[in-house]
Length: 254
Ligand SMILES: Nc1ncnc2c1ncn2[C@@H]1O[C@H](COP(=O)(O)OP(=O)(O)OP(=O)(O)O)[C@@H](O)[C@H]1O
Ligand SMILES: [Mg+2]
Image 1: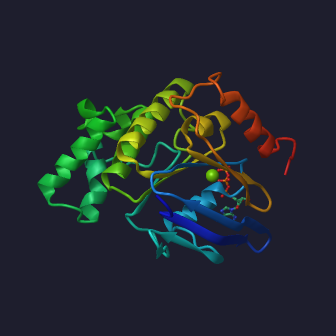
Image 2: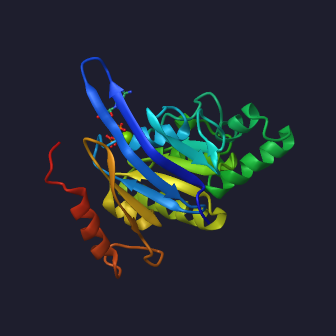
């Protein structure tokens, strides 16, 4: 499938008065339906800015972003974001209520159906037994699962994930990577997933865009057709790692 998300000639400069930062320069990306598209790049290269532009939280200075052929100019329920931090849930609402809340705000369905959809996605991420718990009663990994359930329940055209597993311990991170892949294989949701971790990009991505810094440009986009599940040491993994490592250019300091 072609062209669910198309970015053409995206430029974004932040001018704080003192500083002039080119966060994005001439970014062109064409993401097909059902892609799990990873964006890999060093800190400060413009990854979050790019995702925020797709979400409609930021406006590019020039260029065009199309979702299913329609220009993006503001946030919308067709593009849902999952962030890195554990504080993206409403603390006064239960797990189930958190998942249900955007459906309610967007009047997605009648009350009973909303509940059913929410419970389905809470169960999908393995939290049925915690549906009536509050966020403070959950671990970091469980909170991220709720954020993912909430995003999926909205049935977005594009799921935007900004380093969602970066604050998790290695074991939980692996578990959530596997869950994300099985969810993606089941629903074929188009996902844009940001990471600065090479292994994570190889494990998840069907395509991987490498960004470089100052200015924030797309250096290269590589296809990743390795068989799944993917593990370090499996055929082809280390070769991909070397290619990406070289592209990331760790020797460059700024
Ligand atoms: N609102 C803003 N005002 C001014 N400068 C900004 C703003 N947002 C981002 N920037 C600058 O734009 C550049 C890109 O930032 P961005 O947050 O997109 O990077 P990133 O790749 O997501 O980094 P990280 O991996 O650390 O999250 C940085 O130099 C940052 O300082
Ligand atoms: Mg960021």
